[in-house]
Image 1: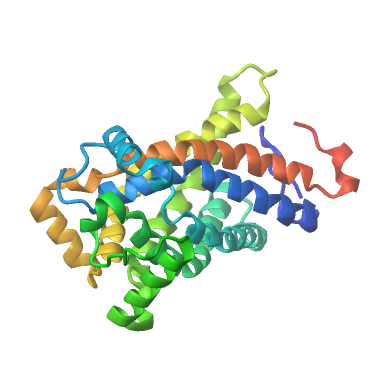
Image 2: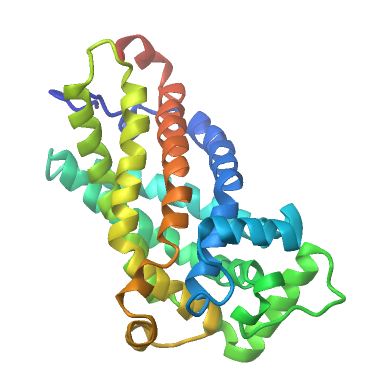
Length: 311
């Protein structure tokens, strides 16, 4: 049930109509991914380039890609990446179920969010990594073709023809293990990111609720807390995200060696590569997730609970 003695109430798993929750969730996830995908692509290109060989920053990358490749260039690999809808639903389900399980041992919301967020990311990344490996190879084609060891054949113009081409090249080069290249780096990036995001989100929402006027809608406070949590989590985990991108795109096998080489070649500054693009993409994502997810949960409340919940 709802946690008591909190300014902002949390709708828990047992309060939801699961059919509404999943059907509306797919639409929300797809809309969010389509909106922020260009900045996901830019972040990847910035992270794998050597120094500033192609782009001087997020805005420069956006302008150059748009000029050289047009709008389709900003959506390279999107159709493949859209299959992460599966992992998105797995993430949501795992998060809610683990929260419910942990509540049997602790009523502390930070503990529940930390454990549930980390567990959800572990499950989601196990599904996402093969999709990411392929979609990232597609992202760095075009103007950034020199950023990857794989190149598309000129005859392939259709998205799934290009995808098949990349899949075949990865399999020939690395076998089936190639599709899980960077799995450890992904876990080291996204488990902490998710584990940190949820506690900070609830923390910022609570702090804002104490500072804001009583008539201020909670949904607005949550929409502000989401980007704040995203910026915090992105800053803390960006170094490993840079390493993850290089391992997956360049075909490296060692997280530690990649990290050492990055420091040796580009110094500590190299660990911040793509951070602004990551924050730019994560902040609107967080707003949409918070507004969409909290609205989704409210719309998915079991009918008998609707009149007993007030925000």
